[in-house]
Length: 368
Image 1 (cartoon, rainbow, N blue to C red):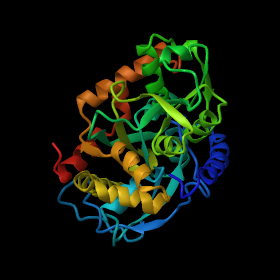
Image 2 (image 1 turned 120 degrees about the vertical axis):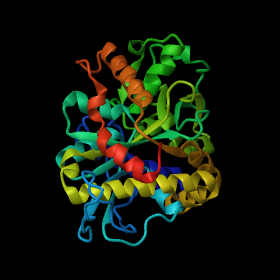
Image 3 (image 1 turned 90 degrees about the vertical axis):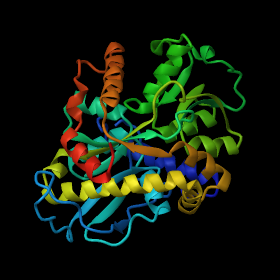
């Protein structure tokens, strides 16, 4: 989310940021999506102290907790989602290790940064991890969340406000902006499928979510699959119309992914485990105190209260263990990409999850 008072400022910054990072190629896809440490749009890179040292090594509950006073974990956020939630719950205070926040637009660039060693931990949906696994990128899923309300979705298929398109079936043969390798791409695939439109029957414009929003608002593409808070901002400005939301088409799953290099470092692994538990607590707080999230959105991004309320409602999530159901859902998604020729080999998606670390984190957090 941008720090903005006007859409023009937001778009200009976003376009510059999107063009700059998407060239770094993939996260290899994290998804995507949204890469880059933006300038005026998602201005950031703040160092925040967190309260208390991480728990003991996952190999032995009796071992002394490592000294984390000199440890910094670099976290790849998107639209400041994690920073907003942790700020709303006042969860980041104090402590022995620090968090260096970096802003990205999409999962693929985050995967690329994790693979390259500039990021330790990142926020993304499930889709980028499928492409990461297919590419052999050394990243692991260490934690997961599910939407607290399956009736809402942060993803929307939108058209220009003046568009004559009223039904999804009318998009056949039309141009649609979406970032490949991201969950937005998978949402689009499912929406088109239900409407009887083949994915190959539309013209895909591979654009970051920010650039896709700009393109559809200006009429450069017939439609775009975008996400909050961009939908709320452009709806309020009268630039777009929502044709369909992702609710009912896909699940809203959030992942925390870590580089294998960070997980191989005992101190960073301990800091990551502690960070995840703090995030779990922050999510629970925000679920019970939604106004806190709204206030944080307004403060951090400079959006209106109405825009913040709509955006905040779609990102309320609940921590969950990485269950067999989540793994099965991801396997079905990977099989879909294989069938469409978007990945070239059959995957056993279970291999992308660090189930041992997740089990340890969840046990300490009281999740079952």
